[in-house]
Image (cartoon, rainbow, N blue to C red; front, side, top):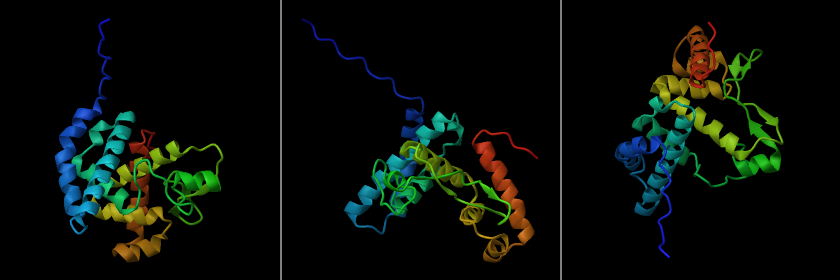
Length: 203
């Protein structure tokens, strides 16, 4: 009996794109973790690659592969590693973004662009949700991180600050701009996030 080779699984469309970006992503990771011991540095670099791979796969799933740039994927991967987030690993029960915490505490993180009219701020809202799965939460976390990575550096810092619920006046003082400018940026960030998700943007 002649043994035939099993048919190979076709590679996803984003795979070749990602392979082409790998040298730049690895270089960015090496520079970011140059202060670590050789073994820790090597592990951190591999974690960056894994996070970047998950991110580009998610972009492909959203039909947004055109947003995949080596620098943005590398920054996202480094940020994930610095935050202690390893692909496929659970985090502790006190971290609400950890699948372990979500199962134990029955919480899920809603969209970052939830607008609180009373506080004039976006907030990361925790709600009870017994049906939310870790995969959905992980996808949302990747989306948010990738969206942040599309913003210029200063705007990204402002957006990250506002996403924590910082008040307009406090953010204005922190970044040495007017409160009116912060309010303007809130609307800009909201429209940018909705556009990133493929949702209609209303003037």
